[in-house]
Length: 172
Image (cartoon, rainbow, N blue to C red; front, side):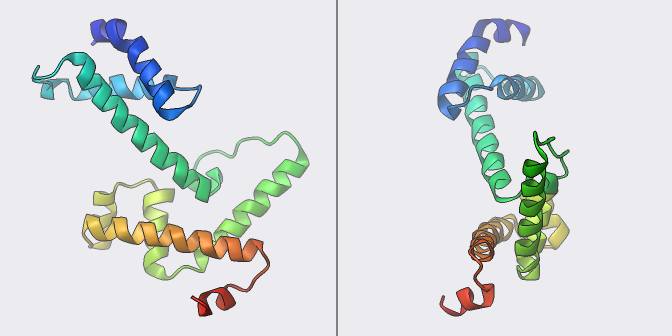
């Protein structure tokens, strides 16, 4: 694996930088090589090591983008991560208000949406793990998560706009 890192590490780094458009891809590169090491027994040599690493890099980038999108919905504090220290008291107050607003939006969801959102996004369980907890299929978890996120955004936008959520749902 060390030889592959030396031979292809910069290529994987460049690929991830272009693919994700981010400057900080070192963590993603590390994830790629950790996953490659974990799955090295599965590598059968039908593809070149470089293309195999790129396929892993693509999946890692897609997973990172999904995680980033989920984090846009909910403040990081709700993911169980440490709250980043804000530079000013004003920024801290704004962050606390964001947390409270998102919490209100999540609590207005029906129970099945709330359960899936809490398990998949906040607890970061996989679809299969969430399905096991809820006694559902993975497909049902994925569909419900998509609907829950869409409805949570709608509720959050209505709350931010000062509208009563009940009024917004009556229309549509």
